[in-house]
Length: 564
Image 1 (tube, rainbow, N blue to C red):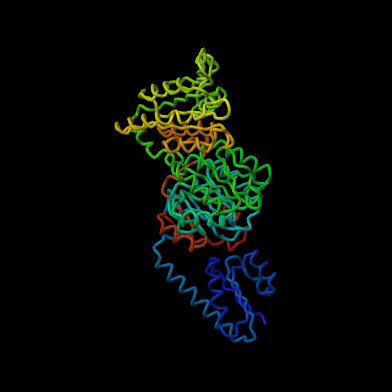
Image 2: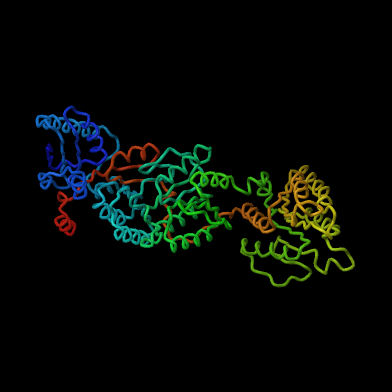
């Protein structure tokens, strides 16, 4: 038999009522019990679980509804007594809490006038209205609540974009901003990996693996499961990419999504390509695309975490451990490329011009593919250098002499070399360079100096010089060998950017970056359970003890709002 009790004007958050339901389920003579607020959505849950009674028609959104399945009517007053005791205990505990409590938006903002985030975890039918109020007050919004219509979501996100704010969610389960956990989140070490996710548990899995393996994250921005749908168009995803692109603490970005709408995915990938930071992308359920430029596509969440950790150990610092010697010299800023292959020299010049914003040079007189300030890329296979002399692929004398000379120039930071092996070429071209490079490096060590040598080898294992042997000789002499000439050219530009201190290219943005840079100050609307960890990890929080206006009567609430 079903018994129903309505406790008028006794609003409680859903977490408390779930805990209470679990507590009372173990009472003798209680077969089943459900305790929820009398919102329309909750009444539907009562009905769908065959727990609806006519008395529930009397309940409003501010009323606690208790439905008991029992053979003993005498159990009802005992249940009510336990409910009253539980609510009293909650009230006492609330008074002991040090987190400031407010009963309205105005009160919340007066207690925390510099608030920059609202965390909303109330019934979905009211969440959009409160999110709008937060945006109107200049706050970014994190919407944990679900059951927000996609039409409302789009309006909220468009409004946020127009105000240069961020709406995370709705149905956003996880976030970490400046080390502060939002909703469902783990304790994660701080680091230089930023995460954007349309999946709460995806963010948790990747961030947890990253932390367990000794790395850390800068921020984790949840965007809500529908953000990459065709209806929403990735509004928050794009804003989040702008934020992390411009965030000085984020050096690698992980992007996690279930399969997005095709046109939205293509738009997001185009944006990836504009960001000069490594991006690890996983579209769960889709076979990964071939990695390109700065984008690394992966198949699993674990792969995403591991790849992000690998990339987070910055390429320049990893490959050039003595890079700070060049930084301190304050003079060594030049790339010197000495090539035997004309097309390879042209490719390197093209990449360097593009990545260092150097105007393209059409005049290649005397094999000079690039000459700009301290940078020089020269094709020593040009006719200027081979008149009456063997080609440098056969005789490296001219390249060796020029290399010795440029390493004496005070502005030389990086020497870029190509080695082309195969039939017709020198029988051991690398072997000619090794003693000279070692001699140069020894002289630099004695002066506590540094020049970085970067090379690529064009050839195969079947060539008489044997590709692997040539590479091994170079590496054993302290030369960084890249898989291709293009990779070598890209690396030298990264080194120069690092030396110049401008190695962080960002997307242009109007986005308000204060969410990631200023102290997090949060208006917590709904579950008080979420406020405590935010305070523990450094956020300033006011808990807005929200309940539906006008007892949940939306018509009356709309009239009251117009009277303000």
